[in-house]
Structures are given as structure tokens and as C-alpha cells.
Amino acid sequence: MTWPDRDDGFDHWESDDLSLIRGTRRYYENTADAIRDVAGQNAVRIIPVGEVLFEIYKKIDDGPFFHFTSIRDFYDDELHLNKYGFYIVQLTWYACLFEDDPVGLSVLHYWSETGEEEVALEFQKIIRDVVISYKGTGIRSFAPVSLAQTMKSHYPPAPLIRVKS
Image (cartoon, rainbow, N blue to C red; front, side, top):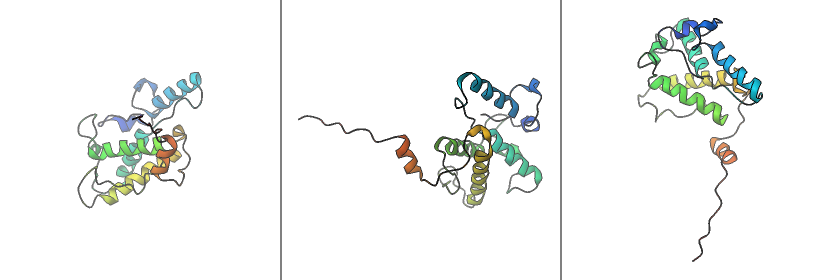
């Protein structure tokens, strides 16, 4: 899934007006449904980055949300995200691909400003809640396993290769 552009996209995110084509929840869900109709129900899942950003958009709109005053604070320009937006994209992908709860993960290699841990934790909670509540992910809960356990189950170690001497 993608996300709307910075300037007017979130005003249309919930629209059922299919003439808007891209940039609406309905567009992405219809596309996924069409693929599922042809290839089967498990053929495609949606990584709900747009939904996560929309939840943040609503929090900003409802009142103070840390130092953010607009969804524009997550973009570098009309379309490209800044460090906050990119962090949200990466963490949403991580939560969906590994089916791992993002709450509590470190932010040290994403941005170096101190005092941002509380902001990151709130993003992580929003991502967790959206990923498990959005039907298109196919994820209803996160299993209590570590990333290392997840990696082992998805990527078994390569067999030993013995070299004859």
C-alpha cells in the first residue's frame, strides 16, 4: 500500500469517490480484492502504511500530538517522506513482514535526537494497533516470539559444505 500525497491526499483518504483513482483507501482495497478474486484469498495482503499515516493525521487534527502540527511534518516535499515518515513506513513493513510487535524497538539508527523515544513509542503503538486491526494485513495478533526466533523459522541455516582436502 502507498499513502496519499502531502497537500490534499488525506482529505480524500476515506472517500468512496472512485474518480479520484489513486490515493484513497477504497482504491487500494478494490485492487487487492480484484487480485484475490483471480488468484485466491491469500494471494495478496496490504501493508497499511496509508492507514497508519491516516491515524497520525487524525491524532494531529484532534489536538496536540507532540511537536507535530500537520501531516506535512512527515514529508520532505509533495510526495517524499522525511525521517519520521520513513520510520513509519519501515516499521509498518517490519511488523507485517515478520508479524512481530514493533513496540519497544530501538530508534537509535533512525534518528539521533535525544528525547524522541516517547514519539517513537507512540508511533510503534499506532503501527501495532493498525496492523492487527486492519483486515487487509491478515494479522490479528502478534505471537510472543523474538525476531531471532522468527528469522530462524523463516530462514533456516544453510547446510554445511565440506571441502575435501
